[in-house]
Structure formats: C-alpha cells, structure tokens
Length: 270
Length: 303
Image 1 (spheres, chains in turn cyan, brown):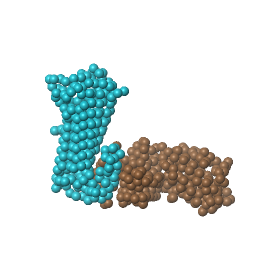
Image 2: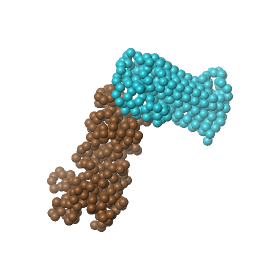
Image 3: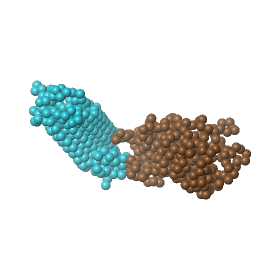
Image 4: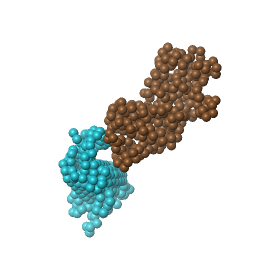
C-alpha cells in the first residue's frame, strides 16, 4: 500500500495547523473525510482539500510533499507510525508527541519537540529557538523520546528538559540546556553564551569546551568515564553521530550553582 | 547396571538429576581484563552451593572489548538461587561489596527474556548519598554513582529467569588422583566454552560430592560414601577395585538445554582424553529420579 501523501498545491495564504494530519488521526478516514479536515480557525476555513492533493492509502505512513514555514503543529501529538515532511515546517513540530517517527527534511521553527514524551523526531535542517522547550505557563519541556537536529538549533535548546535525549549536530545558540530539570542534551559544534543557564540537574554533552561558561559552574575534574563510553556508543549505534562525542575522559563542569543545581556539562578534551 | 564404552572410557547407564532454579546474569566490565576478572571472581567467591552460600555463581564467558557496551573487557557472571528473594539479596550484596568496590568497574544487565526484574543500580544508587545520577537512553536505565576513581556506572535492573536448572553433574572415576584431576580439568575446559552454563565449585570441580542427609541431626548433606574410595570395603560402594579417585563436575544452566550441552561437552572431553591419561569411567549423581524435575541420561549425551 502506498503512503498517504499530501502534495502541497501552493504556498498557503496563512498559517496552518497541521496537527490533525498524524497517522493515528487519519487512520480509517475516507478520502472525502480527509479532504474535509479543517486546517485553520480563521474565516477562510481552509481544508485539506484546499491546500493539498491527496493520494495513497496507508495512513500509518504519511508524507507531506512540499513544506512551508506556515505549517505549524506538524506531527503534534503523534503516537505511532511515520510522518515525513519533504520541506520546511513552522512552529511546534512534533509537540507532545508520544511515539512514532517524525522526519522533517527541511528546517523547523520554534518549539520543535516541545513537551514530547516519546518517539523519534529528526530534523535534517535547522531548528528554531526553544527546541523541546515548554510553552509559556508549562512546567516542563521535553519529557522523553529522542530529538535529532542535523543542522543547528536556536537559543534555549532543551529548555526545562526533564527526560529523554536531544542531539544537535551543528551547534546551538545561547543558553543551551537552560533551566534543565534532567535528561540529556548533546551538541556538536559551538554553543552560544552560558550553556546550562540555571539548570537543576541533567547532562549537557559537548564536543568542545564552551566559549563562555557561567561563573556559577565549577570544574569537576576529568576521570575515566564509562558513561561517556556507553553514551558515545549509543549515539553511533542509533546513527545520530558517526564519531564519538565525548571520548574516554571528558572534562566536567558542575552547576548551575546559582540555583543549587547538580547538573553537569561534560565536554570532549582532546 | 549396563555399561557403554567410548574410547576405552566406561559410561554408566545412569542419569544426572537436576532441579529448577532462579537465575540471573550480569556483565561486569573493567579497565582491563585483569580487573574485569578480578571483580567477577570476587563476586562469585564463596558461591559454590546454595546449601551454604545462598547462591551458586561463576563466570559464564569472558567478553572482548568489542562485545561489551562500553568497549572494555568484561565477564558475564551468572547467579543461581532457589528463590527470587534470595537471588535478589545475594545479587545486591555481592554487587555492592565486590563490584562497586573494584577499581574502574561497571555493571550491565545481561539476561534477555526473563520473567521479572532484579535490582542492580536501583538498589546501589543510595551509596551515592544524593549525588547519584539517573540516565535513561536507548531503552535502558543506568545509575551513575560517584566514587573515588570517578563513577560507578550500573544498569538499574537485570532480568531473572525461572527456567534455569541447577545440579547437572558428571562423576569422573579414575585409577589415581592425577588422572581424575586431568579428566576434570579437560571437562572444565570444554564446558567453559558452552554459553549459559557455569560450574560453581572451585575451578569447576568438586571433590566432596554429597548425598542427601546424614547420620547427624541437622546435616542437609553428607559425604557421598558410595563414591569414596577409602570406604570401598565398608559401605555399599559404587567403585571397582582399581578406582582410587573420583571428582565431580557440577553444572548450572540458564536453560535445560544449556545443562545438556555442557554435560555433552564434558563427556566428549573426558572420553577424548581416554583412560590412560584421565578417567576410566563416567557416572552421574541422582536421587532415584524422585526429587529433581530434570534428568540427563548419559547415554543420550555421548559424543
């Protein structure tokens, strides 16, 4: 059976909420029902049929042919199946997803993977600010699952992260891992100012010494680390990295002591 | 008793009688082979028999750096006990006193498809006094406990099987102690290659085989007089006039098939050695077939 494919007719005239187009929400719907799904709450009342040409039948494997920065909430709340976007997406891609695989072949806007609890979100391009982070008023950000950004991420990647693994392969902006509660944020490439800003617990793993550390982090030595060896192997076994991130003897900063935190920033030394 | 002969070694037409047990397995790694082995050997010390040690344990196989999760040399250790509670207690005590303490050690779960979880790092984490770190990734849960040479990395739990078997055995009867020991060493070397089977006694060998009970009150086991050469004239002996030493190999297996494979490997090695260098006869211990659920007939395990 061919994947259920949504081919973009033209750039949409306004922002769209694509959260209804997930495998489990499309399962069992007829072509007519799918075509009638509303994608905006404005007076324009755009539906799937207005924006996409729909083909294929396998709702467990959904493809969006053509992306747009106006596609918000792509894969939000996903629990199973696969969703592939051949292009860019807007804000909150994969927000609160719990399972399945979401692949974005372009770049994503802010709050990608926000509050996700499970599943696998991969972005081949760049991600915006607040990767995995909570929306205003929410207590915790990413709460499980895996986010891989093959490009770079904006500011506050992993903000208030509580569980799971986020990996950014081409560096991220300021305040990486800000206010982390737990979980693991791995970054290759440069990080901006003050990584781990106000983090309580959790791990920020870097392939180099950060350029501007907060003075409220303290050096904690560099003994042999079995955890680093196991985590490096995990990253390579999952195809996230091709080379070890930390090496056998990463350096460590502990903090953020500004909030009596017991988190850590581990960084490769050689 | 009917007897078969393989390469001059007589095989008794009898069977080994074994029992169902609970078992678990962990993988211990270290900075090099010496220290991986040291942690494993220390943990499996005084673990020869559930009668007096609480559990039976030994190294199953040694693993190369390419075969372990952290790229360092390791040993797969198996523990067997008669109850889940006792297995948990023994595992926790031995891990805490022998592996946590060993320089550079780490510990991973190493039993697939078990029926219940036993605590590893989930129990030892309190040693970290609040500085321990929990890490979950790739479907696994680890605890990192700060210690004086860095961190002790320990998987949170390991699995337990109820399909394990304890008490597979071979009795190697020889004309001299030297020959009995040579046969036993050959059997141990062969059985060490069988995955999922351990030999918990010293070097894999028992010289004080036992029978159930004894004349003294409270004795759960006492000497196997039928196979003791110095008692040949005074008890109903199982030994012939030329038999002067008997050594036993006791085998515990993750599955019944592992025990059978181990016994087969042992019989193969002893018969290949022959009666001039090693044992003249192979027998096995049983209790008439009434106590143990698993019976391993030697005639079914010939090379």
